Image (cartoon, rainbow, N blue to C red; front, side, top):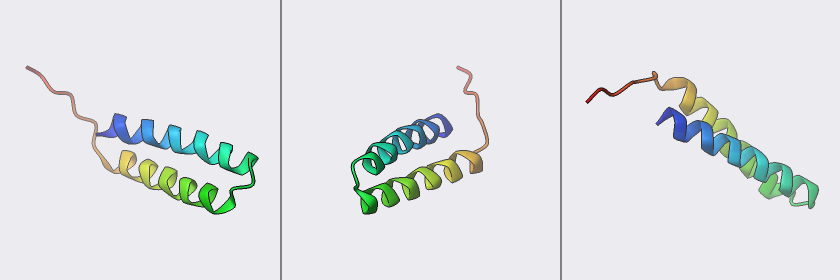
Length: 52
């Protein structure tokens, strides 16, 4: 789950930049919030390694 949250944070950050470049301020804000939430989730999850 940590990898997924990190990936989502990266994508949201890129999309927020695209929104900012096109004057889509509310969308930029929402994407930045999604990025921040994804970072929080990634930091809160202990890294697990499955064996099997």
